[in-house]
Length: 612
Image 1: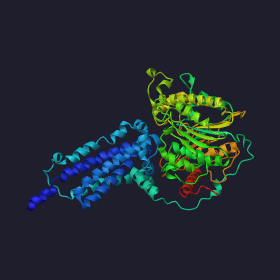
Image 2: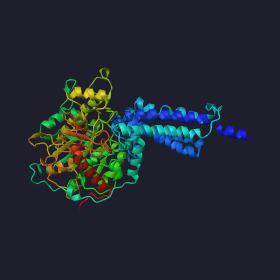
Image 3: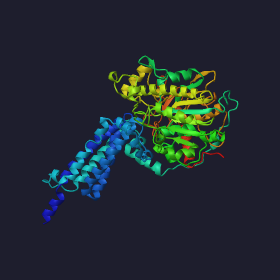
Image 4: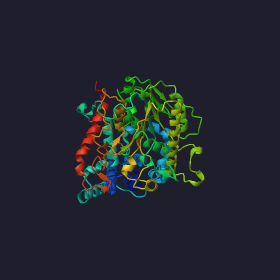
């Protein structure tokens, strides 16, 4: 009887060891693939060893208490880690950073943009998951697969093997710490550490202290030569999906891509050629949040989701106090997307015309309705408004993956490659065409001359990390498609009858639109803080603080594009002449950028942006 019991305890032990060893090896190579696809400098191997150490050490602890449970725990952790890494990589391929828990809480919205998500998935992403069905089959039919019961192995060998693997990984990391530039602080870039820290920061924030709001209070710039030149005019802000600055004045197949915007820039306009997008966790929705409020959107969620009912005094409220008849949002997508239908009342908007209010049967569509149908139907509504009014318009046709009605594609499909670059430039050409039609419609309705138009892109469309996109954009524009170009979106402020046209090199971003527009309208925001500055003030600091696609502390000036990282790994300062050698000289700016972003988040978290 005793001999039988020993055999039963020993049976399957070798099978478990083989299973654990195989999982460990697969996990190691998955991690190596993962880190090679994100920006960790040359530290893929050290971070892979760190991740593998965490896995094997956890299994070792389980073995000490329950050897039989070790295989199940390892398999569970392996599956969870594989899924997390895959989600991270798909998100990183477009956003350039790992997703936070706050953003993952909004994953229910993915179904609305599933076409874009599907287009981001590559074979290397699938590779991270391809073996999971096989492990599931093995788990369900384990009794048929686990035939290795011939050897009796003492139970202690399992912890010994796991300890050895863990020790080997720990030694590898130690060697890296001693003999390479890899620092212990870089371990926070390991994906498990990243998500653990992010979980703590999301659900147990450590923010404390008071914000000196006086540094973010701005008085009316009555001495500015442009103060009040658009006083009392209708306000049109047109946020163009994924409109990048490199398309302005570019030619494709012998024809200009943006003739309508080119003409605007050349007549009665201020064009800011060093304008960069600033978004939060809600991407497009946080671009509009920044533009209307001069506040940075949160990075762990969409502003409209996280601060739905906060108190604000952005542009809609200011114009309401000034006697504007209505502030209306036009966006031909589902009203609940990014929580817009619930958030807009707190933003001060009177009306929200969403997809549910448009006739979406007029033209075929891939995302919302086409821009032509959007502008035509919106114009019919705008004609009913009493002047002056505010119309905030959000376009869709140039949204990734850039689908527009087939009849409006100006390149013959038989002679084109349906890649993202070609589809993107077509979508921009299409938008520019229907923008011109919309302007003509406003002229016919007698609404053009008494209006001011603000046109900008919400964020980038084509990453410069894709070699094909990079080469084709560079061929289009005749210069490097560098980080400056990737983050640059156009800002055009068009004032019919202005009598001048200026192209300005002042650096700015989305949070600067509201102060600039208030100056032109002859107004001020005396009830809330603003983190932006008037772009038409020659004394303002020419700088743009970045977040979301870059770590806090990143910034852009006329000469420097500083990409910061939370732990210092692979931070770099790009200049017009290449990478800067000494990045420590930028420490004061990095510190100020971080402090500014933290102040804004603290005020928003405490619902304390009002000053009266």
